[in-house]
Length: 175
Image 1 (cartoon, one colour):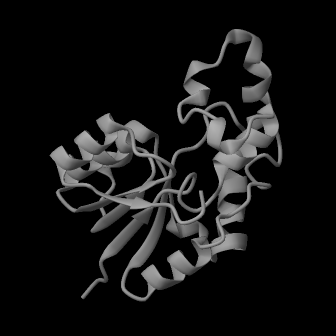
Image 2 (image 1 turned 120 degrees about the horizontal axis):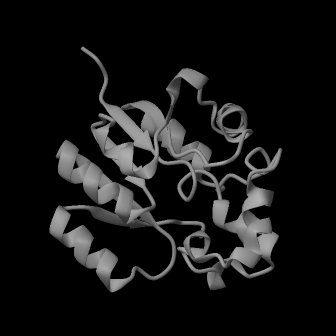
């Protein structure tokens, strides 16, 4: 009998994208808006250029708990990483696969790339994701266990959507 599948998002669950971004733009992680990249002014195009450059993804720090989370889930699940590539980066795919192997022991065949809007089509028995806008459609489409891995205060609209869709909220132990 096949083992159940656990889908893990990478950025915000395993890798500390927020810390890397905060170092790049010179803003403390707790002061960086969650949707920072969505609201960039055209004069800040250098931020996207830097993220799309070689070694950006490769040099992200893992969360201290991340390897243990993967190993604990692997005792019960077939662990897959469901991650969105950063649009415009020619390095993201290869660097993400290498990063996951190095820091999490995840093999390339266990990495699934899908944009946020397409994550809902990927089957799993449980999904751990830090973005409610990706997780809510996944939960609705798959009707499986969904866990929102959240850093900091949970906005009211996020809590409301989680309540409406049956999503559990777990606070990231290392924001």
